Each structure stands twice: as C-alpha cells, then as structure tokens.
Image 1 (cartoon, rainbow, N blue to C red):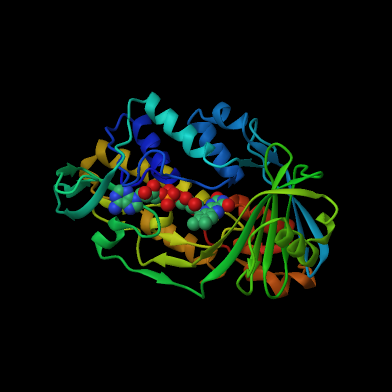
Image 2: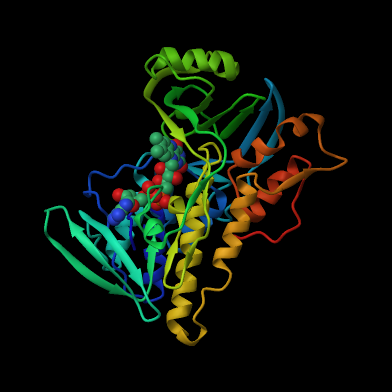
Length: 380
Ligand SMILES: Cc1cc2nc3c(=O)[nH]c(=O)nc-3n(C[C@H](O)[C@H](O)[C@H](O)COP(=O)(O)OP(=O)(O)OC[C@H]3O[C@@H](n4cnc5c(N)ncnc54)[C@H](O)[C@@H]3O)c2cc1C
C-alpha cells in the first residue's frame, strides 16, 4: 500500500480482514500527516461499521440527519440523509485527524505498523509480480520490494499513477475555497448547501458546538481567513447564520481541481482515492468514494489472490470510471423530469457534485429533489 491517508488505511484494513499480508508505506513522518475534518457519507459510516470501527468513530462524531438546500438565497428543500441503520441517522462529521487515527489504531491492532519516512521511488510490473524501489529519508538508504499487488493510495501527486504512465486529465478551471471552523449557537444536526449561479457554500455541524463553513470563492480572499472574513461571507451567502456565529477557531484557503485519471490501473497495480480523482470539497465525494473504492479494490484483490486462475479484478476500472464521469459532470448523473422544480434546472450540475452521497444514496437524494437519477447501474 503506497500512502497511509484514509484511503490507503481503509484498503489495508480490508486486506487484513481477508488474511492478506500487507505492507503500508508513507513518505511522511507519523506526525507530519494531517487530514481535514471530514464529512462521512452514510455509506461510509456503514463501511466503517462493517470493519468494527463504529465505536471508535462515534464518540467523536456528530450525526447529521438533514441537508437543507438553498438556491439564490431561498430555502428550497430539506433532504433526509439516508440512514446508516443502527449507527447514525445520516452522515457523520468528525474532527480533524480522528478518522485517520481510528483507522491507524485498528490497523495496528491487526499487527500492521505503518512504515513512515518511506517513499516509493520507482515501480515496474510483469505477469508474476510488481517490483519497486523504496527510499528512506536518509539519502542513499533504500530497498527493493516485490509484491503480488500494489495499491496507489498516494494522493493527487501519485507516484504510482506516474509509474503506470497514467495521465490525470483536468476538467474545468481551478477553484478556490475558504474554510472556517466557527462556534455557532445553532450547530444542530442540519447541514446546509447554498447554491447560486456563481458559487456554492456549505455548512456542516461538527462536535462541540462548532460548525464548518466552506465557501467557493470567485476571487482571491485578500485578507486573513478570520472571523471578520467569515462574517462578511456569511452576510453575503448564508445570512441566516449572521447572529449565530461567535468565534472563529480556524480558517484557511485552498485550491481544488476537477480531474480524473484516464484509468484506474492495470495488471497488478491499481489506484484508489485522490490518486485517481479530484473534485471540489463541498460534497466530500473524493474522500468518501475513495474509501468505497479502497474497500472494493481490496475485496477484489483478496479474491484474485485466492483464485489466481481468474487473473482479473473484474470491472473495477470500468465501474469506477463511469461513476466519476458522472460525479464530475462529464456524463449525465441526473436529469430534469416533469416533477422537477424550476430552480433545479439552473443548478443541476452543481447540485450533484455538492451532495454528500454516491451510488444508491445519491439516487435517493436526487429523488427527494424530484430529479431523475441516470438509469445506468452505479458503483457502490
Ligand atoms: C486544503 C485542503 C482542504 C481539504 N478539506 C477537506 C475537508 O474539509 N473535508 C474533506 O473531507 N476533505 C478535505 N480535503 C480533501 C481530503 O484531504 C482528501 O480527500 C483526502 O485526504 C484524500 O485521501 P487519500 O487517502 O486518497 O489521499 P491523501 O490523504 O492525500 O494520502 C496520500 C498519502 O500518500 C503519501 N504519499 C504520496 N506520495 C508518496 C510516495 N511516493 N511514497 C509514499 N507515500 C506517498 C502521502 O504522504 C499521503 O500520506 C481537503 C484537502 C485539502 C488539500
């Protein structure tokens, strides 16, 4: 496993569950890694539950049961987020780093210690094995490895993807987002999505009376991402929060690409997570769908190891490519029907990428919005 981000850790856990020997390497130090507060889609909560991780996550997580959709300043719909039966009444938000910590602890419990400070420098494969060169942080120190399979969960600048010669194709311009974690007197259990022609914004409650505000910016934020900047954005985009926000605990700005790898791997080397796709942050689809890919890929690899005569991972590549074409708006994921509200037609493409769901759960949300999901079978 190249990469000990959430996606790599998920794949490693799924492989260990099937009794597969796993090595996990990461070029960073254990404490150099940082992951962001996450919104776990209901499907991800179910996935983590199936790995026995519910307790570890739940005491730090905050359930989010509804998503209110605003367009052009008007409250249009309140969606019931699909349930994760017996675990959460919808999505779950987690503070910074706790998802990665829970996954790392569980993997340690399975006897797998992450090899930090270890960078994949080169990679080849033939029909018998994948082989490569790992570099430790100390120059000149390195080692070769040989594996039945390699998973590249090594993020947007994936060395595995480059080693395979797979191109990451960009779709659309770079987008800038400002993020704020702020205390709010009405954190509640409702998330909110506010969409206009020019931009989209979201609010998700996190634990401890804190909410995460995310704003797509149309021009650079020419001031620090602090309480004053947040108050200005709230006044313009989410005025119903104006009286509620008290302090800003953290703020930052980041750029996001929309991009998709031309394929998800070949032979013995496969990609999952941001190594294969990038999208905007509001629907948190890259991470959540990436976790589903990791689980799916690990199950297929486990099966291929048990049945080497099959020599194939089935339709992993094709199914995931179809799913991402739709999530990135490159092919149709939803269409307008006779029952669709007029406002939906103006924002159809943006809405799909901002909803906290994929697969059948996304169909459910589209149906609640009175949009027609595409007829194609969905991955996940
Ligand atoms: C500024 C910013 C804000 C974000 N905000 C949010 C948010 O609010 N909510 C949210 O859900 N998501 C957010 N994201 C996205 C989120 O971080 C990613 O979706 C998620 O981390 C992707 O997981 P991953 O496991 O695929 O990749 P990553 O988490 O990127 O993990 C890849 C790992 O591979 C390692 N690696 C890379 N190359 C090598 C190599 N050659 N050899 C060995 N190891 C290697 C890296 O060190 C890294 O640990 C944000 C991202 C950014 C940049």
